Amino acid sequence: MEEGNQSHTVSDDSIKALDLARQVRCIVKLGGAAITCKNELETIHEENLATVSSHLRKTMASKSGVHKGGLGRSLVKAGFVATRISVTSLNLQIVRALAREGIPSVGMSPFSCGWSTCERNIAAVDLHGVSKAINFGFVPVLHGDAVFDDSLGCTILSGDVIIRHLAEHLKPDYVVFLTDVLGVYDRPPSEPNAVLLREIVVGEDGRWSVLQPIMHNSNTEVEITVAAHDTTGGMVTKISEAAMIAKLGIEVYIVKAATDHSLRALSGKIRGKIPDDWLGTVIRFSR
Amino acid sequence: MEEGNQSHTVSDDSIKALDLARQVRCIVKLGGAAITCKNELETIHEENLATVSSHLRKTMASKSGVHKGGLGRSLVKAGFVATRISVTSLNLQIVRALAREGIPSVGMSPFSCGWSTCERNIAAVDLHGVSKAINFGFVPVLHGDAVFDDSLGCTILSGDVIIRHLAEHLKPDYVVFLTDVLGVYDRPPSEPNAVLLREIVVGEDGRWSVLQPIMHNSNTEVEITVAAHDTTGGMVTKISEAAMIAKLGIEVYIVKAATDHSLRALSGKIRGKIPDDWLGTVIRFSR
Image 1 (cartoon, one colour):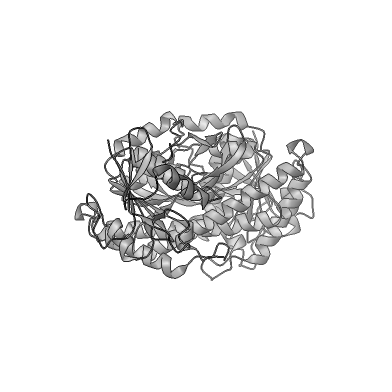
Image 2: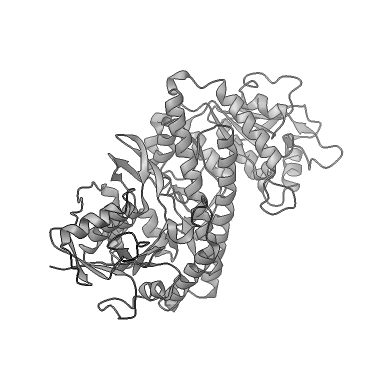
């Protein structure tokens, strides 16, 4: 009755997927009208969606073989899924908040963008999409994500590692880490004598030392105390990644979010010289 | 103080982004601690996030030039952003519903996956990520999306076109379109004499005709009435895409979501022969 338009272009990339042919039993199109409420914008019809999901489970359960892995693997998969739901949900809320301010931002999940790792190190990244979005005038919003790892199956790719990778390839003028404390301290910031490290320099060899304030202890001792208050490795990872960015000649500011200090850092007003009334940590390269 | 681990592998793909170097002024890391509530799992600190977003707007506003386009282009960008927020939000809800049923699903936005069009036809697609997810035992959940168009700037890539493209390359046994009516009718289903078309066959030339029920009108007349009740082009596009899938030798079922009919279609029980008590539309290839 209607002659279909059969003209369309296919990129060579898609050929890669051909080896998957016949591994897929069924493709399902969940129509918008089928799972949203009539006359209510963007409202999910929870009951229908739950029934459809249950149908899909029943359909899949009857076919999935034990060869796909036991409980252990299922639990890992469930964790992978839960992690991705959590991070994409936060990402969506950030994109919404930026859009409310009129910033044309687009969420881009590293997992969807094809980022993967090997032994937790970044193995494959296609920054083409990120570049294209920037060229079109959009602000790409990435996030730490669960990704496939060629060696471990899957792993968590942290936001700090992503930032370092982006910095390496996009070569920005500066990088700002917004955090919940004023900057990097010589010990847990909750301790009474904690000292805010205002300026850290990174040498050619990748080693870093505190330039401001002048520390009474040796560098080695500072290293120990910074590491000690951070059992999860979070701050050490952050400083380590920041140091690698600084080594590229890109200044890094670690500063408390939603303060005048962070606003000044974001505006680029800290570049070159740190104002006396500015609180935060600058990490820069020094030959 | 700490020597950074500088070993990491970079794929050749990322080299593409090098031409973007120096177009980016600043990369911002929005720390989780900075924009979520302490001790409350995954709860956004709305006030901090709003302040940070406002800071970013102020920072960007002072730098963005007029050369990036006037009101028209801004509005298009805002529409693009709003569309993506809407579709990714629905996608997230679907992934959540599937996860609740224990289906290990992963949301994959066509925009993030690098899908783009030229003159609204699919121009570039990388199905590698989708294939990999399937091979790892996950269910990729894609969605209609706003994408960049090499000719038009941007456009909407419909879910039906995506399904057809996936079917072409993944070659599933069958494809199910879940919708809010029983199937395809010869006129608006709300009209009293609307007839459910149970079996449509597609020929080598891409033309389709109704096999069941036997129509009193000629094919030409049916064509007109199907088109007439669908000013948005939705049903015509759907049948046209479904016909192209059927032409590949893949059976297509258009069926009402969350019913016993859809459960049977999903389970593959309609393949080959349509049971008398099954309500829906089958579209298949016939030489």
